[in-house]
Length: 445
Image (cartoon, rainbow, N blue to C red; front, side, top):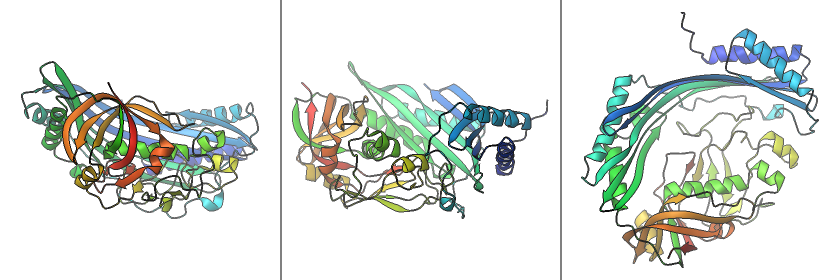
C-alpha cells in the first residue's frame, strides 16, 4: 500500500484553487475555502508507566459558496479531486435552500491581507515515541518523588503537533502558513490524612527547545498540590480578591465575549453599546498584537483573509474597539476588526506591581488559584463560581482555603480592579498578570 504524501502549503493551495474554480463553474457568485493539515504525537504517563500513546494525522477542507445572498457550506476530510468536486456540489446544492441574508458574503476585498509576514510559528519537533515516553515518565516521576504525600497522579502528558493551513476566496486572496505547538503538563494528587488535593503545572511553546524541563514541571505540580493540603473553609463575608494569572486570563476572556459581534448583535451582553465608554478601571489597558513573533495566538490574517493589525482594545478602562468578523460587523453597521476566528495575542498592561506588592496592597483577602463551574451570565454579567486558593492576612499568605464561592457582577468587578501584577503569564492568547479586585462576596460557612 502506497503511503499518501503529507499535504503541504503548495498542495493545500491547489485544493483551495480547485474549489474556487469549481464554484465559479457551478454558478456561484462568490466563494471561499480553507484547507488544513496537522500531524502530531501525544503520550500520557501515569504511575510511572505509559497509559496512552497516540499519533494524530488530521486534514480537512471547508467550502462556503454564495449565490447572491444565499449561502451554502460543506466540508470533507478527503482531499482527492473527486471528493472536492462532490463537496462543492453539495455546498452549491444547499445554498438553494437557504434564506437570503443581506449581510452574507466575503470580507471586503480592500481589507484582505496583501503582505504575509513570517511570524516564526513553525518549529516542528521530530521526537520519537520512546523519547516522548521518557520525557513524560521523567516529568511525572519528579512529582511523585518530590514528597511521600504525593502518592497518586492523573498523569503527565507530552503533546506535539505541526501543520499548515490555507485560505482563499474569489476576491483574489490565496495564502497560507505553517505552525507548530508543543506542550508538557503534569497533574498529581497530594494526600495527608483523609484530605486529598489536586493541582497541575504545564509548559507550552511553538518551539520544543523553549519548553520548561520535565522534572521542573513535575516538581512544581507536586509543590502546588502540597500547598493546598490543610485547606479550610471561610465564613461568608466580603473581601478583596486577588486573581492569579491563570484565573485572570479567563476573567478577561469574559470581557472579550461581551464585546464580540455575535453577543452585541443578539443583545445578549452586559456591555451593549459600550464603545468609547468607561467600562473598566482606569488602570486597565489591553492591546492586541497579532504579529508577535512566536506568539501562541499570532496570525498574519484572520479566518476570512482580513489583515490582522496591532490595535488598542481598552485604553485606561475605555473600550476602544469591538471584536468583529465581517458578518456581524455588517449586522452592526461597522467594519470588521480582523477577528473572524478569534483574538490574536491580547496584552494586558500591568501597574508595575510585583506579586508581593499585590499581596501587601490587598492586606487581608483571598488569593484565588482555581475556579470551578460555569456560573457566569453573559447577559447580565452576574458572576458566581466555586473557588479555591489561599487566605491572606497582613499581606502574607496564611493558609489554603477551598469549598467556597466568589460572587459579584463583572461590570462591577472590572471597575473595581485596583492593580495588575507584572507576573505576566505568557502561556496563552491572553497575557496577563495577577489582578487585584477591591471587593467580592465570598460564600462559605
